[in-house]
Length: 351
Ligand code: NAD
Ligand code: UFG
Image (tube, rainbow, N blue to C red; front, top):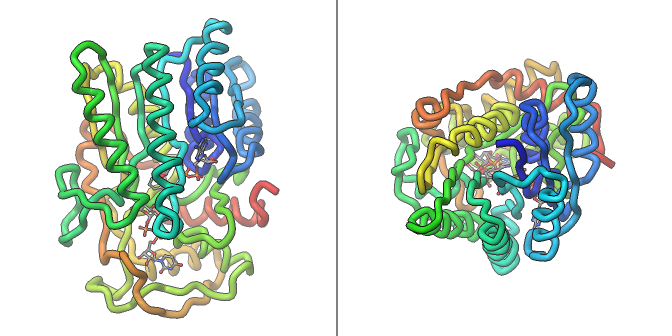
């Protein structure tokens, strides 16, 4: 594969993945509406890349717009052909991702995530481009036990955001069943991505008050918020707080480049793969590690459990290890160090 289209490439995971793609020598086309991101992230990606790979000529072509805009998608595929760099495959990150917002405004989520994906798939068919990596989520599972979650676990997302991910996976599965076309698709179900590129030039940049624990901890550390509310200290876990599977965003980005390489081995196939470390960390463990590594104090209070939360969500990642030979390079300490480095260097994100 030489050229890839990355939808939502300016976002948190997309920007880190674009960097890895460039480092691997790929030509990258990005479409992003910047509804939840900033073009600066891509300029920073180019800076990191050109500072360390002065001899490589491949680059990012940036298109501002919505994946529901079919004319824009057609323009991108055509311009890539004119440049003699036809798009071989797509990594599809573009989507809205807030569980809370999706409960308030489900139509917004169905429209953006589902209609957006259908629009993309239609244009891919039109251009005979049938290789796809899709950003799915651990939220598609119906968690009902304490064991590691493998890909055969029952599915039943408890929120509209997760329902859109599951519905998209169903469409992708049906495409892979088409006899006449050879769709090769991998859906990656991410667990909890955190951290940032070690340079501190790119990182997570949520709009408004973050819903997720990691950017909230960073916000407390930098003085944006007075304290962290820990949702529940009565969960059936070793310290009563929720347990999650945190994964460094650089390790997650690497999983995408491995997945792209793996596509060529597939025949009319749809693969679903968990992307996590299989290591469970409680909210309190995370707070304490962040404090120790970054020599700072995170004030917190315990509050009620958050609706829809679960005690323990940790991936069984054996399929990921076996299929891609992936292994994590960054531990929890590095996640905390790199996330804080990004936050300190960019207290107001990319602004
Ligand atoms: P993000 O919000 O930082 O990135 C998503 C990007 O998509 C943004 O740049 C946004 O502007 C863009 N976008 C949204 N709708 C668009 C549209 N219709 N057309 C064009 N661009 C659009 O989120 P992220 O954390 O980088 O997540 C990337 C993907 O991974 C998302 O699909 C998300 O649902 C999924 N995911 C994220 C997490 C997580 O915790 N970060 C976990 C599981 C799955
Ligand atoms: N938490 C707090 N206080 C906060 C925020 C979170 O105590 O201010 C706790 C939660 O109760 C939970 C843990 O921190 O125990 C992790 O919560 P996050 O919101 O950071 O992450 P979730 O695991 O709930 O959800 C995230 C994404 C979903 C995605 C899922 C995949 O938000 O979109 O990971 O596992 F689907």
